[in-house]
Amino acid sequence: MDRIAITGGAQLNGEIPISGAKNSAIKLMAASLLTDQPLRLTNMPRLADTKFLGKLLKRLGAAVDESDGADGAETVLHVPEIMSAIAPYDLVRQMRASFNVLGPLVARTGQAKVSLPGGCTIGARPVDLHLQALEALGAKIDLHEGYVFAQAPRGLKGAEITFPFVSVGATEHALLAAVIANGVTVLHNCACEPEIADLAECLNKMGAKVEGAGTPTITITGVAKLGGATYAVIPDRIEMGTYAVAAAMAGGEVRLTNSRPGLIDALLKKIEEAGAGVTETPDGVIIKRNGSRLNAVDVETGVYPGFATDLQAQFMSLMTTAKGESRIRETIFENRFMHVPELARLGADISVSGGEAVVRGVEQLEGAEVMATDLRASVSLVIAGLVARGETVVSRIYHLDRGFERLEEKLGNCGAQVRRIHGEPDEL
Ligand code: EPZ
Image (cartoon, rainbow, N blue to C red; front, top):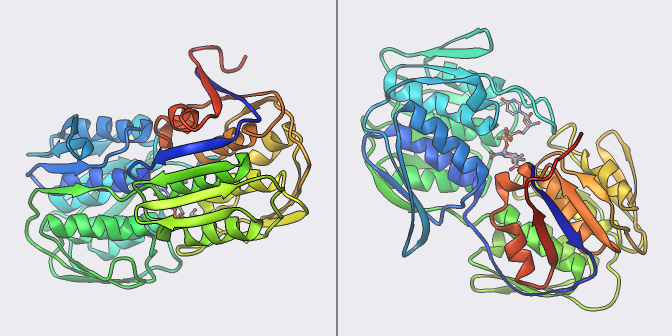
């Protein structure tokens, strides 16, 4: 398996264009199941996760056509007919978000059989809220042998649903199912992440009637049929935040383009507080740091517009060499500190107790061999490698390829010494 080697010490200077958001693209791709007309998605990121989902959608009956158009990378998805309403374990387990095909399948065909996704390294991640929402919309749900069987032979029916706590995936799933349900659905206590508003905007372009997405209450008036559309995926706020942290870590001046800094306000405030320069531009942000060491600042993850859990590992890397002690609290996932022992291999001084990590900044990290454990953890190791003395080699980077497009090229263009080592053994 591939590995990434980083030789620390180079500043970053230049421009990094931000790709379309993975976590939006995969939900938009699932929306193609709701119509027999083509859905053309532009500003598409080319990632392992979009490839996985493309594979599953093909199995369900989609034609998936990828090309590079005038608006960048695009994917046209066309599902004239659902050929199979079964999403098998081997495909769903590779990417949890595949589970979100359940709602559109049952909404369009009246039945579906989709594997339960199982847990993952960052936590148990149950799907109870997803299933409760589908049941409230009138689907009969049965669980057998690791699969969810959902049936609604006479179609789904609009309902009033209050989520007991905020879930991005459950909000999106309910939205995907309700757009072609009979009648009005009102969702309360919804997640407000920008990817949800993005999904709603695309669905509305396809003919849906969704109001309030991006706020805690979403109202959906079901329509009989959706049509095709052309839609540009929102910029990836987590990729933007990751490179903002990388620039603050390595020093230099990096302009992040094709993006919207407003999407990561919470992170940019913390980067500024730590002592790096943040200047917003019409299509992104410039991150600048010269000379002096950053100061330690505390962070607590939260639902949007709070500090994103998907940026926690990267920010922890930044704090490993800051002056002082930083407290980092993770409130979304119960096991999202897998990067801590790997950062410790690079010389970081971090202790974890429950949901809180205390990072005592050290003057210098040392390169070492480390292992990626999940997508965002893996990039936090690359960020640490940018300043570690000598070489850092990150293995298991298939995690990284799930969500970061052309990472070596984007960092390399700004002067980082990053190279991919192809096909060498990942571990014994
Ligand atoms: C989405 O996951 C993202 N994934 C995650 O990004 C992100 O970290 C997360 O939202 C929070 O922002 C995608 O969009 C594909 P949740 P999701 O439902 O939808 C619990 C990345 O690195 N929960 O908001 O799964 C759950 O266990 C990924 O790109 C239930 O208990 O997140 C978690 O503790 C990682 N029951 C909390 O809620 C449910 O039915 C929030 O999860 C659903 C969720």
